[in-house]
Length: 217
Image (cartoon, rainbow, N blue to C red; front, side):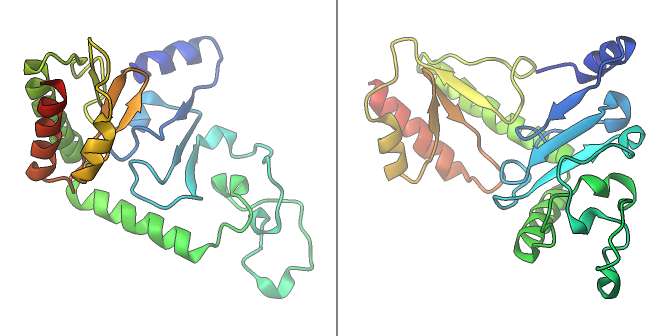
């Protein structure tokens, strides 16, 4: 976990821009943009925002709204919504941060998928999601600790992430045995990455812990 408010204050004190990649937290943890004051923040939709591959989000502080885009395309130019005048090429841009939009942004399936994911998140509220995911990962961590596995406490780790460490090494075939029970986790180095969400049930947790017990027996 990083104290982004403190980092932001230090960055501004030295005239440095604060640029955040929030792909692994936006949608699962609250973030106070007014307190952090990032210059730019980006996030892929396919992680915790529950959206599809191929689309992401960019926040740009208003002081950067006159910046030069990386990609120059017709749709981020001013007046591009008026199709009858598209041949009247303009050098100015859409207002706000829309000058930074990617080309062919008007991809209905992607935008509708991203919107549906955000609707799902807002139905519960990000703070409530963070609290619930923290409760779930903590419960798994306590059970796993009784099996001799290690983990970092919330505060050191984000509430929605749990890395289970195996002092004696990962048991052979662990992830395959879990997949057979429809529990899909992944290995990161020598740890097991466990990231449950609201759609996971108590049966999923039971299957995870039961397989761990079997493999460590």
